[in-house]
Length: 209
Image (cartoon, rainbow, N blue to C red; front, side):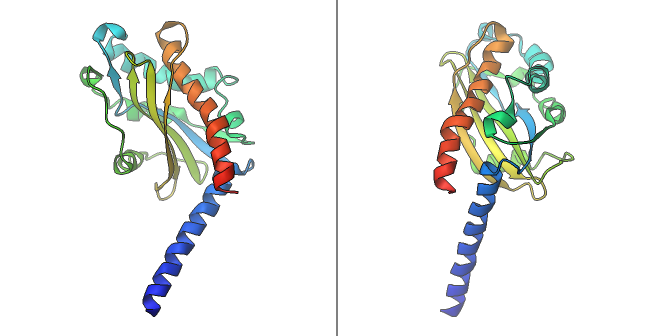
C-alpha cells in the first residue's frame, strides 16, 4: 500500500511539473524557444499531378523557399508576435537536410493521409540532430497539402531539445490562400500561426492558468 501511494504521488508530481513547465513555455513572454521550421519529410501532396508543380521542383525549390520565408518576410511570418514571445530564435535552415531525404517520386498521391500518431511524431523529432539555442523548440510537421479539399494538415510540436521528448503536439487543419503555387500553400502556414496566436493561445491560458 505504501509503495502504491508513493508511485501515485510520483505520477502526480510528474504531471504537475509538466503542466508547470508547459505554462512557462507557452505563456511566459520572456521564455525563449527555437523555431526550426517546416518539416516536409513525411508530407503527401494529395490530388492529381496537374494540381501541383512538378514533384522534383516542390522538393528542390519550394520546400527551402517556404522555410526561407520566415527570414524573407519576417513581418508576416513573425512567430514571436503570434506566440506573444519577446524572443524566438529561428533556425529553419536545419530543415534542409531533413527535407532533402524526401523521395520526390512518392510525393503526390490520390489517397488521403492518416494522422500522425504520437509515436510517429516522436520518431521524427528524434532525427533532429541539430545544435539548439534554447531548452525548448517548436516545429511544424506537415502531414499533407490537399488540393481537392483545399486544406493543409499539420502538427505543431513543442519538444525538449535535450531529451527530444515531445511536450505538446497540436494538430491543425488550415486553408491555403494566395496567388501562385508558392504563396497559395505558404498561406496555410500563415493561418496556422494565426490559429496558434488566437484560438490555441486562449486554450492555453485556461488550461495552464
